[in-house]
Length: 189
Image 1: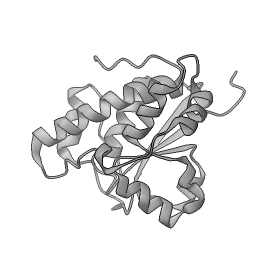
Image 2: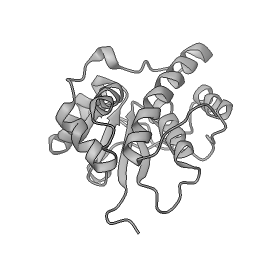
Image 3: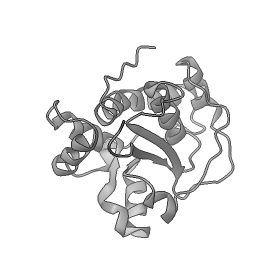
């Protein structure tokens, strides 16, 4: 029996129709779709500013299908104070998303990371740490986020852009899911 609730990770992009739902669905797949009730990690996604009520972008949905994950049923939503209050860490796809959250909800700024920023920090945390200990280590070791770590928005930019975004997110998720869930994340499937 778990002594504490699972970590809850929120992935954020602009509209919550491409990058963040892709990250959410791939993380679920890595955890075992559906994740077991005792899973150490929960994931969700939202957009800032967001465009609520939209399906996932077809190109990113195709990238999920190629990897054996499900894209159906996604409905976009916007970041809100309540959503932020309910998560342990926010992972943004662009520096601009991070800044918008920090400006609109400054009380949540300490738990907001860029995708590559969190990946970099977790890779520098001792491998013996996982779950909350790995997250606390990442908070202490995180280098400043920057525009150079942005995941380019693939929306309406074709298959090549979607593949590049998916590959970049997959590489980061191997570290994030593995370290925060305390399991080795294998993306070869």
